[in-house]
Amino acid sequence: MKFKKNIFAMALMAVLLFALTGCGSNQQTENKSTETVIPTAQPAANIQAEDEKQTATAETTDEEAAELVQPTEETPEEAQSAPDAGQTGESDGLIYTVLPDGTAKINRVSDAYKREIRDMVIPSELDGHPVSTIGERAFYAYSRLKTLTINAGIVSIGDYAFSECDQLESIVIPDSVVSMGNGVFLGCVGLKSATLSSGVTEIPDETFSGCERLTGITIPEGVTRIGAGAFLGCGRLTDVVIPGSVREIGASAFEDCWELAGDLVIPSGVEVIPENAFFRCKCLTSVTIPDSVTRIEFSAFNTCESLTSVIIPEGVVTIGWAAFANCYNMVSVTLPSSVTSIDDVAFNSKAVFTVPAGGYAEQFCVAHQFQYVIAEDGN
Image (cartoon, rainbow, N blue to C red):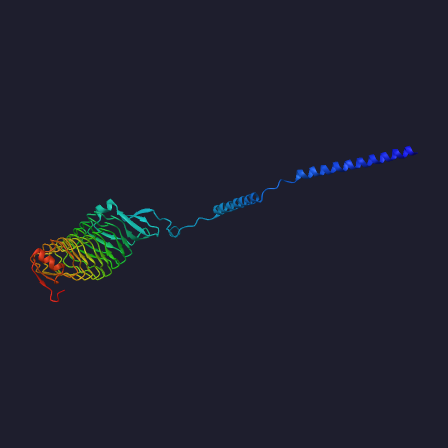
């Protein structure tokens, strides 16, 4: 009986030991299983950088997509351009280009037309396009052209547009014209009369240079600049009035206007009388120089043989080389106290000078042995 109890006790212990061993094995299995499914932790900085990278990629993609679908915007010029802008055509012997605003620019005259036509009327339209512009050299050396009518509506005339049209006799530029290029009528030796547009603000360089038969012209009020050589060689030009609006006179502007006569008044506001401005204007009898002038440059009034006197106003600082040389009939010259430089051959020695006492002008007369008197007020 005792033996049986021992056997039973041993069997019970074996069962308990087995149960305990199984539980430990299962716990280890569960731990191993848990370790295999838990990922290795990443540092927080790496996670943040990865997130930013993904966000940036997404944003770039969105921007690129937006650019792909965004419509192209037209500039105002493109939106308003005429559908046939840039195209060329020919009508009535005039070869033209359509401008972006739908108007026509005359480029040139066909050779066949030049051989046949002497009287030209520039039309207001070409193939339905209003004519706004006469291009550079459009009628250059059109030697048979005798009369020319420019219709209102033209706003711009390009450089040398009618230069060397040597038989052209007269021209009226309509008031619609606001812009003219250089040398528009250069070398039109047969041109006798010209009427300028009231819309222009300058007479550009060489506009009427070499128009040797031009006898008269009215410069419109509102013109602020008379360009270099604008009337160079207009030998028969007898009278010209420079309007008060003029602020600049270019070099050689009236050079070799031999018959330009009477009293010349330089407008107040002009600061420089440039080189050769009135060179060989042999018939000028007097000139009025405003106190706005600070310089009279070389040969400005050289060989103005009919000038008998000149008053140089206060404000003039410099009188250049031969400024009044060869003015053979000059008998009286008044110099200001403001002058500090007079070229050695600026004047002929025949004149009697009136000068302020003790200043540069008096020293100049003494040095050159010119006859002079002191101004009554001493200044």
